Image (cartoon, rainbow, N blue to C red):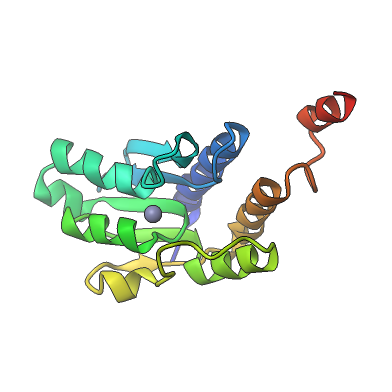
Amino acid sequence: MVDESELAYLRRCVELATEALEAGDEPFGSVLVGADGTVLAEDHNRVAGGDRTRHPEFELARWSATRLTPEERAAATVYTSGEHCPMCAAAHAWVGLGRIVYIASSEQLAGWLGALGVPAPPVRTLPVRDVAPGVVVEGPVLELVEEVHALHRRFHTGKAGAADDRDHRNRDD
Ligand SMILES: [Zn+2]
């Protein structure tokens, strides 16, 4: 179960996903937390530059491989706005990281993107369990699912649904 302190990490994932969106990137954000609750690293999606492997979960896995001991990695948790894709799930398992807590499942995301008419990704959508059966996985976290859904809607529909200052400026252009 996800308690209040864990919800705080997940809310940070939503903030990071929002930062990605505002930088023109896909809205995904992730936080790596040590056994004692310390935030060790965080990142958001950076694929807009052309490297489609720049997912935050992949970056955190590789970061942890060079900076944490195997014991520290096993005791760490990755909180993330969306369930790991197969590439990131594999990296997570290969470096021996611990638990995963995601807000929205890959299945939910695939449903949202399908409804928005986004073409299917080049990599099959699979639950983490099917890629890395030894990893403990929790999600979806219903309290925050709609916020993540809204970010993806904003990313894929441009200005629709977003009523912030930036949109008013765009309309004045
Ligand atoms: Zn990924």
